[in-house]
Structures are given as structure tokens and as C-alpha cells.
Length: 177
Image (cartoon, rainbow, N blue to C red; front, side, top):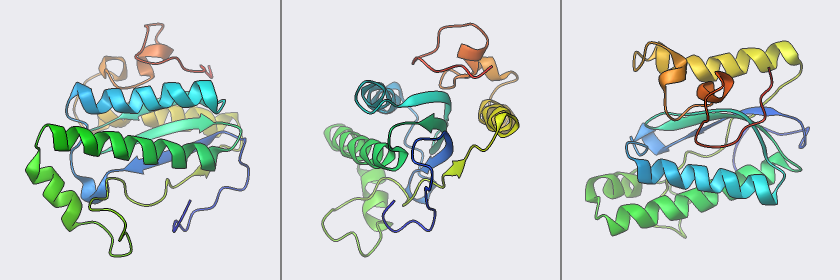
């Protein structure tokens, strides 16, 4: 993944990944920005054989457990597309404060763009067994609970915890258990 120090050695195996907004700026605070995330994931499910096992979207980052035919390529495509679409939305809505922050905190080597939305890399962690898969899915689902946003994971709208409780979520997933 570009300049990331993290490497993906098993491209087709499930990975726990984290995507963080530059400088932890709260971008996912409305339906429009989260819809861009979901539309991109749905597209990759159709075109890259992306399998989404778990997810959570918080105000400034997201966690996924995913696999695809080439997870590195899929995640690069995901981040490039979502950055372009979210930046376009922010410009259309004239969200000057956030745009100014994204320009200010942009890495110096990013000369071809005015803004940088995502921090570099995805911090991939290979899921090596069923125990680790369960731990990562539970970590993802408990993230908003630990932050004190909700009392039970199934109440977080932007999480696959709902799917695992038998409630239709916002996107189809591959349930692990």
C-alpha cells in the first residue's frame, strides 16, 4: 500500500484493516459521507469479489474484516474512490473548515492533490485462525460501545453487529458465526 510500512503477504485471505481520516478529522458525521463508503464497498463486492465479514464506521475511522482476490488492490481502489467522492461532496457543500484542515495536514509528498482525506496505509492484520476472526469481529462491534456512544453493539447503525443479531444491516456481509 504505497508508503505504508505494513505489508500484505496473503492477498486473498481475510484481513482486519483500519482506514483513518487524516488527523482524525470527523468526516463520517452525516448519512451522505457514510453512503459513499457503503456504495464503494458494494461496488467492490460486485467487481473485486470483496467479502465483507464485519465493519464499523465511526466519526473519523472505520474498521473492516475483508477478503478479496487482491486485498491490497481492493483497498487502494476503495480509498481512492471514497476520497474523490467525499472531497467532491465537501466542496459541493462548501465545508470550508474541514477542507482547510485536509489541505493543511496533507503530506508534503502529495504534490498532485490539494487535499488528503485518508492517512496512508490500512494497517492490515492477517486473520490467522477462527479465534482471531472472532476476536476481531467482536472488537469491531464493541468499538462504539467502548467509546460510550451506545449501550449495546446492535444499536450502532453503521456496524455489522446488526447483521450478526439477525437484523438487516446497511450492507450485505458474509457472517462468520
